[in-house]
Image 1: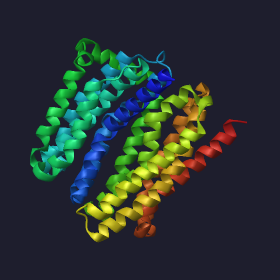
Image 2: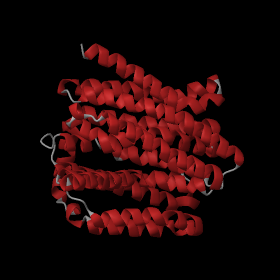
Image 3: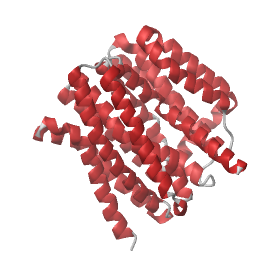
Image 4: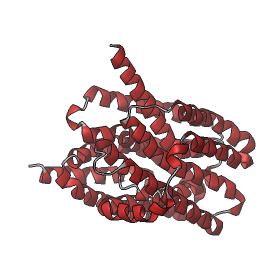
Length: 381
C-alpha cells in the first residue's frame, strides 16, 4: 500500500515537473496577456514558433522514443545533439530578432528564447530521470519558484525580466552541470549521425513547427498583432490538451498501450477542463484586457477546447498505430498531411469570412481526426 502510494506520488511529481518545464515559456505569455500586453504576446508567440522550429523541429520525437525503448537511441546521443542545436539556434534567433523584431523589446525576446532552449534541453534530462525513477527536487523548487515570481516581475519590472531569466537559466545549468559537460570533438559526428538515423521523424517534427510559424504569422498579417495575440491564447486552450497528453501520458502509451485506464483518461479530461475554466474566469474578471478582448478570448478558448478533446482521441489512435513498428513511417506521413493543411487553413478561412477564424483550431482537429480514423480502418484490418 505504501509502495503504491509512493509510486503514485513520484509519478504525479514527475509529471508536474515535466509539464511545468515544457510550458514555462507559454505561461510567460499568458501572464503578459493577463496584464494587457496582447500585441507583445503575438510577437512572442511567433518568436516561440521560430525557436521551436530550430529546436523541437530537430527533436525527431526523441523523448517518446527514449522512454518507449532506450535501445533505439542513447541518452547521451540525444543530449549532445540538443545542446549543439540549442547553441546554434540561440545564435540564429538573435540574428532574427535583431533584423525582424522590435528592438525596444530585444531583452524580453531574448528571455523567451533562453527559456525555450533550456526547457528543450532539460526535457531530455528529465526523461532520463523518469526512466531511472529519480526526482530532482532542486530543479523542482527552482522552476516552481520562478513560476510564482514571474507575474510579479512582469507587472512591476518588466524591463528587468531578462535578469530574472538569466538567474533561472544559470541555476538550472548548475543543477544539471554534470549533464552539460560534453566533448566538443564528438559534436559534429554525433550531429550528422542523429540526422541520418531519424531522417523521416526529423522531417515530420520540422514541418510540424514550420506549419506552426505559417499558421501564426499568417494570422498576424491578416488580422494584426492585438487580435492575433488573443486568438493564439484561445487556440492554446485546445493545443495544450494534446501536448499535455503527449508529454505526460503519450510516451507511456507507446510502452503500455494495452494498459490504458479509461477512468484515469476521463479524470484527466475533467481536471483539464476544470483548470481551463478557472483560467477563463480569472481572465474574464481580473485581467487588464478590454471587455471586447475578454469576450473574444472566452469564445475562442471554449471552441478550441472542443478541438482539444477531439485531438485527444486522434492521439490515442495515432499511438495505437505507432506502437507497431511497420506503421511508424505511415504515422509520420499522415502527420505531414495534417501540417500542410494547417499551413493553408488560416488564409482560406480569412478569405471566406474572417469571423470564422475562431473555429480554426477546431477545424484542424476535425481534419486530423478524420484522416487518422480513415487510416486506422485501412491499416488495421
